[in-house]
Image (cartoon, rainbow, N blue to C red):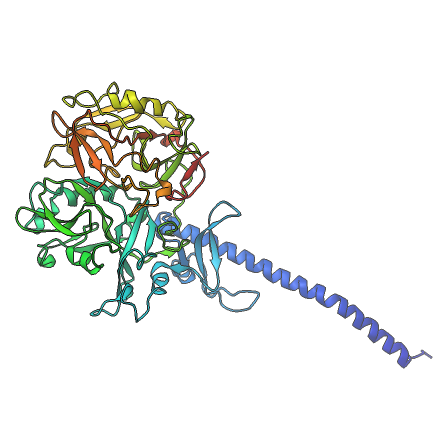
Length: 547
C-alpha cells in the first residue's frame, strides 16, 4: 500500500515550486523581452537600410533634399512590406527615418524615429508666429496661408538658413504650397546688370544679371539643391508697377514691393551695401538698394552686388536656432574636396610666422568653383599687407607684377604643396558696360591669384569695412577684417585703371599704384588627388578641416 503525501509535504512542494517560479519568471521574462528588443532592433536596421537604398535608387542619393523618409513612402515603393509590427508593443510602426548627425560615429547616419520628431523648417518657423505680431513673422492680410518677415535685424533675428553652400534669409513661406522663398544674406558677386535697361520680358531674360543667376549661379549649385528649387514668377517691371513684366525662372531678383514690405531703412534686408533689384526706374536706369538702405536708381554702367532669390520645397532641419552665428541647417556634410559644394568653407594650414591667418595659423577659404583644374577657393578675408597692383595697367597682370612679388608669392610659399595645384585665372579687361563673361576671355595659369569679376564671391561678400561691426557676416570668421575697406580684382577696367571692390559693395577702379587689400585665390586638389576632411561641416563657423 502506497503512502500518500501528507498535507505538510504538499505544502512544502508547493512552496518550493513557488520559489522556483519566483526565481525563474524574471529570467524567462527578461529573455522574452530581450528577444523582442533584438527583433525590434533587427527590424529598425532593415528600415534604415531600406531608406538608404530608397534615397540612392529613387533620388540619386540626394540626402540634402531627402533627409526624412516616411515608412509609407518605403512601403509604397516596395522597399518594405506593409503593416510592420513592433514586437515589443505589438503596435503598427508609423515612424520615419531621419538622416542626422551622430557625434558617436562622427558622421551622418539614417536613424529610425517613432514617433517622428523631425523638424521641418516651416514647422519650426511657425513657432515664431503670434497673432499680435506687427514685426517679425506676420501673416499676409489677403492670404491666410502666407507668412512673411518684416522689421529690423533685432526684430527678425532667427530666419537664417545655411543651405547648399550659402547663407540665406527666409523672406516668406506658404503653408498650403509647402514652399519657402529665400534671399542670399550676402551679395554673391558685383556686375553690370545688362547692356541696356530691360523694358520687356525678353530683354530681362537675356540680361547679364539673369544669365548670371540662371546659368552661372544655377550651375554652381549641387544637384541635390537644384532638385528642390521650384519655378517662380519674378516681377521685373517698372518700380511703381513691379508686375508689369513677369518672368518664370529658377533664380531671380527681389522686387521693390518685397523690399518695402520688409520694413523701412535698417530692416533685415538692408545690408548697408549697393545691390540690384529686378525693376527699372525708367528707360535709362535700374532700381537698386543704396548703401544706407534707401531705394535709388542708377545706370546699367554701374556694377553693384547681386543677391539671389529662390523658392524651395520645405526641408528638414537637423540643427541650429536660425541666428547669424547658428543658422538652421540640413544634413550637408561631405568627406573630401571632390564632393565639396560651391560656397562651403575650408580651413587650410598656414606655416608662416606673420599671422596672416590669425593665431591659429588656419586660413579660412571659401569654394568659388569646381572644374578640371581643381577646387577654386578664395580667402574669406584679406591678407595682412596691402599692396599696389602693378607699375602699369597697360597690360594684363602677370606673376612678376607688384601684387605678386610684394604679397601673393610670399603667402603661397607657406601653404603646403600637398593641398594645392596650379589653375587658370581670368585676367581679361572688365570695361564699363561689359558682360561678366568678358574677363574670362584672357587667362593666365598660376599657383595663386586674385578674384575675377563675375565669379562667385568677387564682391563685398566679406562685408569690407574699417569697423569691427559687420552688418551681414560674423566678424569672427573673416581673416584680417579691418586691414582695408577696398581690395584688388584680377582685371583692368581700362589701359590705365584696375578694378577693385569697395566697402559699399560695388566695383570701382583706380590706378594700379594704389595700395589696397589683397584677397588670395588658390586651387585645391580634387579628382584622383582629392583631399580628405577630418572634421568640420563646411559652414562659416565650422569649416572643413583637412586631414
